[in-house]
Picture 1 (tube, helix red, strand yellow):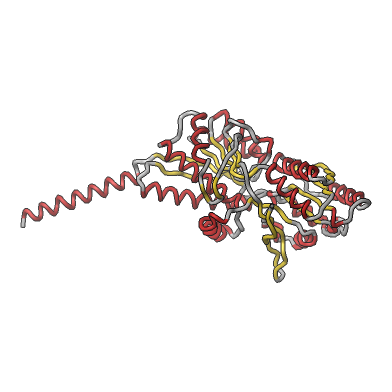
Picture 2: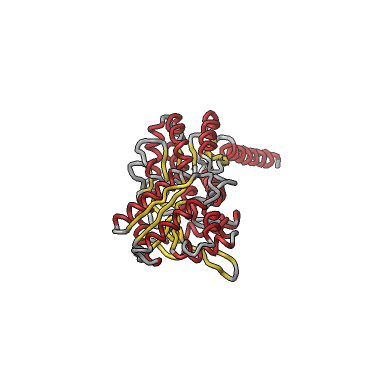
Length: 403
């Protein structure tokens, strides 16, 4: 009996030691990898900022659980930094966190923010992956910036083709004065011209503009001038904007000339939640058959993205999309890089190469990723979303796809 007790004690001790060792591997013997997310949580385009935050939290939980189960000695720690879509705040944030061990940044959302973040990231060797920037002016090879969504040239060509196929012959364009929206305005206009259409640009308005009386008067004047050659059905307006489009639509809603033609928007306003809360602006969107392009999600990965979108929508109350899931995929590619390299490569050049290797061919929620020589997504199709009044409530609804 005594021998049996000794044996039992040894077995219990062995099991206990094994458990302690496993716990040590899982909870102590790993390297913490810091990831910063630069997102607009309360400023303009905050719908993407809030859904991106939720997507990244989901991804980090999944990845850490997976790494733990496979005894991979790394865990990811996500910190979200509020930018309010302000380029200066975004740049200052990167400077402030640069000494805290961050080598990965997801975001910022806008090209204007990214333009100020880029030189800081390049100088410090911090890898940046944006889920929203599209400006072709930032398509630069061998830098630390990567973008997981199609650029303005791809989006502009797709939308211009759809507008032309809808029978439009003349297009009046205007844009918010920032890199991303100006790039979209230029791309849509150039592609529409190449398709044989007539384009008139009324220029741009400043990011601080709240009264659109002057710019709307200019748009109205151009529509009246075009009426000497084209019918209203052949004329359209393209607006590249963020949340300020709500105020613009509100101010335009009482003018029959402005709501007598179709309007189109850019990706920075797609599924905007603020529009749904403004009846006058929503009525204007419905009256003008307004729609925006949204980077399309492939049916081949619906089994993955449908569940994620459902979870994000439940967490935020906001309809998420492919731009949101581009952030989710960015987090997974970073985890793949860390696993492949057994940590973070020491040099900026090695980090760039490792990220490209991890990205190209990766099949995520947004489909198979392929980056071009500038580190930007090389292709993509677009879904179009417009507004509909459903039993007295305005909703974003799917209205078509790019060809």
